[in-house]
Amino acid sequence: MALRIRPDGRILCAAIHSKQPGDIYLNDGDHYRLSVELRALVTEPCAAHMQRGEWWWKNQVPEGVAIDSFYRE
Image (tube, rainbow, N blue to C red; front, side):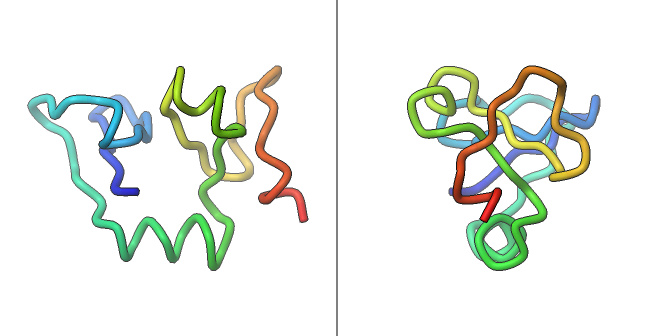
């Protein structure tokens, strides 16, 4: 569940996106805390996530992106 934060600010799934120069790596523990416990980082349902592999701060989700229901509860 680890993440890569790109210099442009995008937050990407490390399992789907390869490392690039300038990436900041966020480990599994921090990712779990932010996404599962605090629900501050959100993503799409699994099928869509596997295509895009992107995460967003809950108050910065782009228009038209459907967030997984887990984060709306």
